Image 1 (spheres, helix red, strand yellow):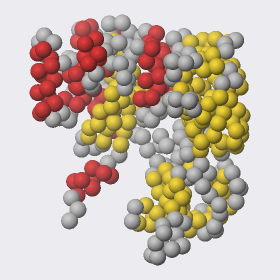
Image 2: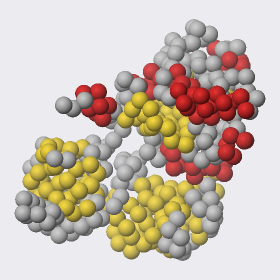
Image 3: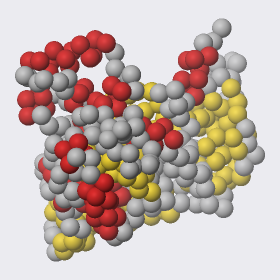
Image 4: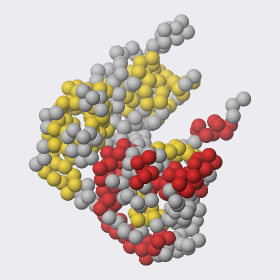
Length: 424
């Protein structure tokens, strides 16, 4: 008999969130507090960080050690690489990406934030909104993270002052007005003491809003995926070589957008052939409809030559198709991006080659100024780049669909991912 609790766990909604903030703003401590107060730490983990805290001469358990796993991180007391942590409450499953605050780790923040539903922007109550806050908020909006929660931390060091909190809130809102911020919330917290993280703070009775955990458990993320524009990049063609499934031909992949239903009329790109959906299969069962981000197998009524990298879309709702593409590029490699440079490009399940045709401008992420007349992007820099591909891509703009609007560049010599792009 199937265990109901395990079935319920599998069916729980998954929320991905990332943390961003300057060095020493308390990102790792906040995540440690979330895990600790929500009873998501095993006893042996707690024992290990207690021992590590004693070795470092700390009077209290250093909850930041739960995420700072690298030796260099523990020695310096900072986060260097993206640390992922998984936990669950009775309401939701969570994946946390704890990202670094240093300027030289911008690429790590982009990596951790690229799939997030929510970004936690930490602000030190002592320092207020600083350049790092601008930079992290800009990157979060560039990556189209739908929800921002501004955690004004270390309120205990400012005597839990309502005036301090409200001044920081005003400063942040003034900056956010320049950006495309769809949903922003504010929470005054003390990660070290636990105020308003999981439990309501007795020290800030003036704050009538929800705790951070309550927001994470209840924030609506069902609309974060594009359910209007049907997009199905084909990942694999399934042709079982068995008597039982002699005539079976299915196209497997993960739905990148929209809703597909049995009987829908669809078009296959790049061939342009049309057909109707015969069936949609999940593991061991057939379903009537599927939507992003489900992984399914689609069967069609007509035999069409379809292979990996093709895309199944609605007949009356097609993506853009072009070999000339403009992207906001974050450069990830120590070797700079140069004009006329050639790279391998991966977009959904499609692999092509491309050339860098132009660099319109670089963005100074500290003040949002556009720096023109540049001929290269260095590591951690962001700029607007023109690409020319050897074959057409089928894409949407990134602000319309994060799946079909993103791509990566790969150095063919080293096989390293050197750049990530958001299609303009």
